[in-house]
Length: 98
Image (cartoon, rainbow, N blue to C red; front, side):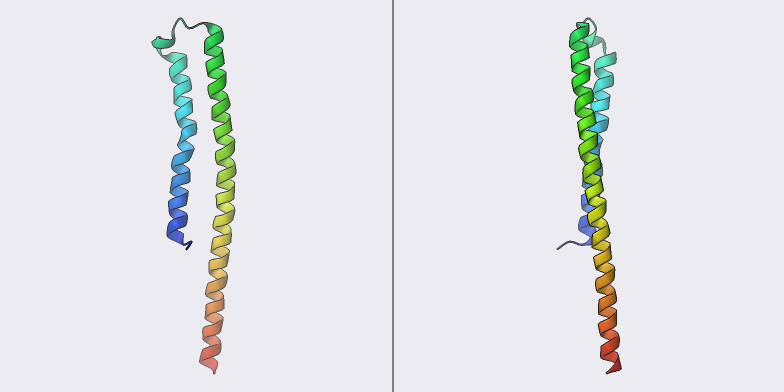
């Protein structure tokens, strides 16, 4: 069953997954600055950097879409929760009147 704890776990997992964008950025800087890559043909370094930038952009797009979906589900969950709590309170008031 979906509850606030499972939503918090999902939010935490999504936040951790989003760090892939930062990881790719770190690799970009590493490839651009580390002496190990000195002497690499410019066309090879450009190709590698362009691939990494493309992967980073794709990851950002996917994570942004996933986060938007999460926020929508989260909003729906709390709307449902409020509605069900209100419904329960209404039923309790009717029972107390009788």
